[in-house]
Image 1: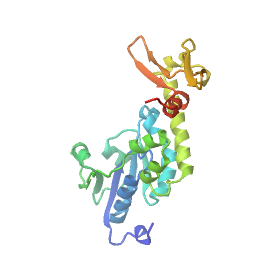
Image 2: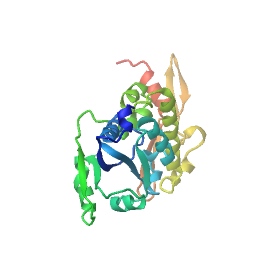
Image 3: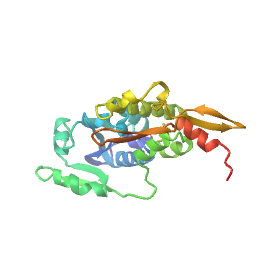
Image 4: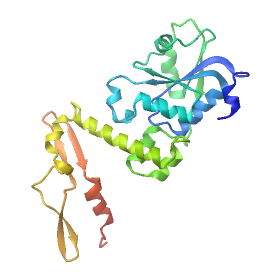
Length: 252
């Protein structure tokens, strides 16, 4: 962070807001927020997350977690949690000064939606359009490379300051825990009786791996569970079956 980022002289005397999940903060988030910090007197990062959506895997980090992470990646931004996404109410509830107007930093795809929310306000609203490029990194892409255990890809996508094994391993554990929480939720609770210790749900079907001139009994690939209401979930044992499947010599 440069000294100029702490000075307000020469900056536009309006607060700027950015709405997003930042779960986790990517290099794109970091650049966007830092660019806003350089331009505007005050920058707020508003994390909109209802109680229901907080249970989703994509929101695997708590608000407190993300606040602490943004202190590392974008220290000068103030982080706000909103339980609903109506922006004028968020500004009012958090006593954000709109007397000089407000700047909304967002992508082209969000402008019309956000504009509709400000039709009845009595202050000026400006939109600082964030141009999308092919090099943009989404948080969903970062979450996927974490799940794939691809640290090299992660370190190129994650915000600076988090590009190390410490945070990679923390995020990996947090995603695993959130996945288990979803499984225990009402939506997937019907699956739990099918799972036994070690994650092997099907005991009757024998599964074998060829070893030399014989075979070794191993865990099944996984299973597809179909609920009476039509819900379908496929679980695959990536640790045992898939690893063996990809590493066994093939006679191709």
